[in-house]
Amino acid sequence: MLLRVAVHGVTVPWREAEGGRLPRSYSEHVVQRPLELRRLVKSYVHGAPNAVDGIDLAVEHGELFGLLGPNGAGKTTTVGIATTRVAPTAGTALVNGIDVVADPALAKASLGVVTQFNTLDRACTVRENLVFHCRFFGDSRHAAAHRADELLERFRLADRGDEMVTALSGGLAQRLQVARAIAHRPTIVFLDEPTAGLDPQSRLALWEVLEELRGDEGLTVVLTTHYIEEAERFCERVAIIDYGKILVCGTPTALKREHGDLAIATLGFTDLEAAREAVARLRALGAVDQEGATLRVRTADGAEAVPALVNAAGAQLRDLSLAEPSLENVFIALTGRELRE
Image (cartoon, rainbow, N blue to C red; front, side, top):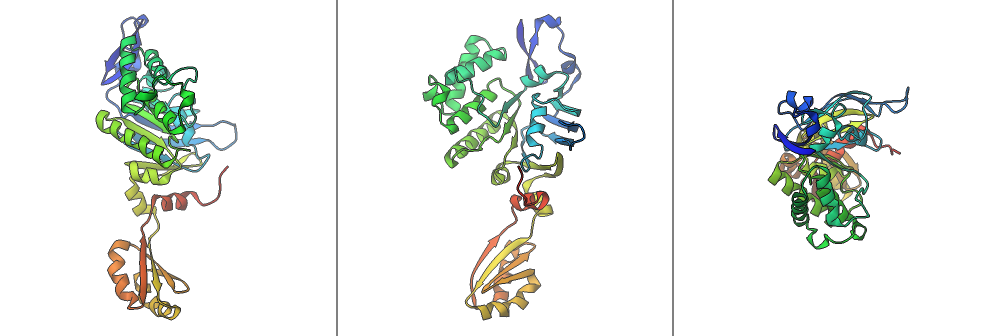
């Protein structure tokens, strides 16, 4: 018989056949971080570089954490290990203190996952996809139906409940995948490229729902994305991974400060001669590049340097624009500009 019990705030399935005792991994663990990776390694081909090469990582409760990296960097493999879909070669992955290799079924009960690809059951309606998911994780028929209706409202799919999932647009299907991933009330959800291929409106709608979930339920989110501006806007911390290793980890602000390029002020002058005359004055504020009547000055703090830039430029200044360092600058600086397969 499948029951559900709460252990240290995590609701997990437990079979009566286990003799009334909680599984060892639960009875021994105390409140843990939602995700801990310790010296994690994954090798697919003997002698070839590791897909994941000794990753150590900890994600805190309620955090929205981003994994960034070029194609083939190891992001999806790392998420695959954490969600029990890929077996590690070495190291340990813990979800809420549960070893995902030793107790994969128990780990799955406290995590949700949305993969890069649509995995909805196309033989079922929108509502049935949610109901059957809840039933799989031990909810009664009544509880599963109630939870499905609740999620349809929250994800703005209530008017689509009786439609087949094949009738949904890409944005609606992705919202349903996220709804299904959290239907069994996990404490952490993994989103692998959740907004890839979505139009701007669908991306915004999905982020609005995720923000609501984190605020209302304290959900922890681990995200992989190629949209670096999304990570910079929404993630509290990000890790940049390449060749299976974590290169840096921290808040977007800290990473931009520590690894980003300098701010770039672009100054346009009335004519070429005025730009030439301003070069010497502006060099005191930072490195100067000239292109015709336009000068670009790399300076440590763009916002604070603006008054000094205006004064040094003189009366022939026509316009001035400022580009502050971005997380994309950091990403390119650390991983390079070459194209990846």
